[in-house]
Image (cartoon, rainbow, N blue to C red):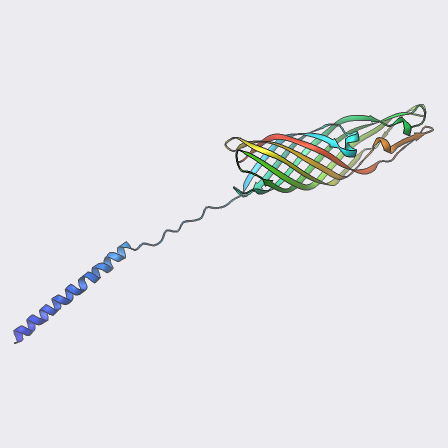
Length: 246
């Protein structure tokens, strides 16, 4: 009887061992299969710079166009925007020279035998900053922009000729910094990796520039009156240059 109980107990131990063996194996296998998830870092998002250098032609308009000559400028710009985005911030600064131009004072405003003319030359340092909107990001990228900033004027204005039978000459120049605004459009074309060409046009207006116009001058009996007054300095700027950046 004791021998049978020992045999039954041994069989029970073997059965228990067989029952628990697969569970343990499965736990061991699952511990090898399980892995921690891979963390993927998102790409960093920076800013894109489009740095341009240009030769600029200036065509004076309005009252300024009555006396100022054609101008040439060197200009630099920087457009900052997110890669692939259409909106950016444009800033530009340039140095402009308006070539000498002489206009005559109408004889109807002068005394008999008087003859006067106004010679105008001008240097300007201009700056502007504002939004730019690119309409397409293809090989040819048209864009529009607007800026606010300032114009700095160094204007030479010489009124000279004859008055009352004698030679006459007087300086009526102006030096000042004035608020200025501008709006323009253009396009950039890719010509190589990280290299573009730009052609753009800008209407620019300085709001407070004091200069002498022909209608501001009169003479009578040899006495000359010249009233220099404040006007806007309007001009159209045509830019042609290169841009670094895609």
